[in-house]
Image 1 (tube, each protein chain N blue to C red):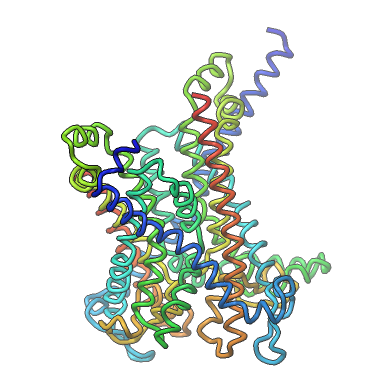
Image 2 (image 1 turned 120 degrees about the horizontal axis):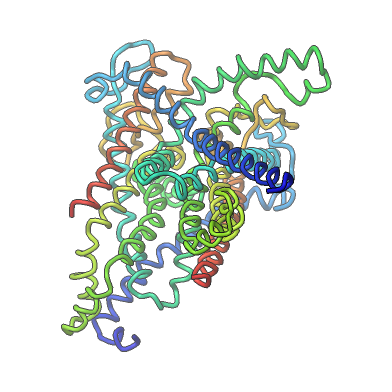
Length: 281
Length: 315
């Protein structure tokens, strides 16, 4: 082999090694901050976690002890109500997209679902403020539920469509061959077959909404006491975490870390449950 | 196909689905309309252009409102963090789709999901208490001292090294948007037909040459769409940015000093706004934010559709 060819080959190998190293380095870099955030959340949050954290409401600054029961319960109430609001619309849109492929509205529905999916969450909060808070004359858990519900509709629509399109065509054909009308095929054959995937989608939407603080700032607003009435302001974990983090009290900073850890655990658990659901059923 | 819908029950069912499914369309239209109506007081007072380009935001004394500082802040923060996140995200996508063994690729996918699932407030919490003080003590102060001694022309661009400002926001955002680019790029790379790779390897290409010449050009659409989705997230990211950016709309912005973005000003001032004009101006900022995100998301969807058609055509 001539010298020139050999040199060119060596250069190509050098570029190859350099690029492979860069790809490995970039991959590590991508996860660096995630690891740091999680490590600190565990280190700092675990210390402030105890039974009181789950069983007692918050205390004013200066008084030690107390917990965030009102925020944990509130998260479940607001997020749960939001899911109830979003489910019919999201599921219907998903079924329409997957089961009626030539419906004239589908291209628009798909495009708008994708677009709303990427909308800043705070805009759903603004919409809920205008539509619910203003007419009702005050902040409320219900308006927060609407904000989270708006947020979940496009997520549910797309996940439902994705799951239903995985159902084998033969199942629908078998039903139609038996003379079932299309609506019976969908309700009695397609949806039950896709049940596991549907549950996964719902849980993931729930997890996504559980971590949102921005749409709740001026809807659910937050409350220092346990509040079960959705017509009154309700506290949620992300809201309380934000308020604590920007407060000047060390005690509250501690609890903010603990809140971060609990929030993270809640979301991870829901996601794991979602994965489990897609395997079990 | 047509006859399947003609059954009476089917027609009722389809109409029912349509009615509920239209909720998505109504939601989008309602958002555009209500944000416009809510912001119309400010938009009419200052004019759409005057509001978007106005540099004064003074709710207390002059009562004039211009969104330019927030638009500028959003553009700087989102583009810089997109730039910082793009290459690590692309590297992750390439590694997960091509080179990683199966178990490692699954682990990486799980981590990407996790990264997207960690709430914004948790990133913000870490930013407030860990990242910002660390940056101030180990990056900003030394740099500031050095500039003061050796390059005093640089000082006005650096600004006050408090730790809470533009730089911290730009550094915390990339890890929140990496998953959106990485996931789409990974799927696009995995969809490139196997024959492409085999042909390039058969010609004696190295792994990187195969990637550069045979795979990346075909996956381009997915990568670009992923970048646009990440940009949309960066534009709309609220809590983490609000917590570390220092929330100052004083122009000109400096690298270390405080700044503000469109979502961060809404999050910050909305509950404190008492006057109608102030409230309306904040909703008008939301109206602008709506159209910016709409444009970016539309572009992403359009690029992705084109890519899908391209890949289908190639197979």
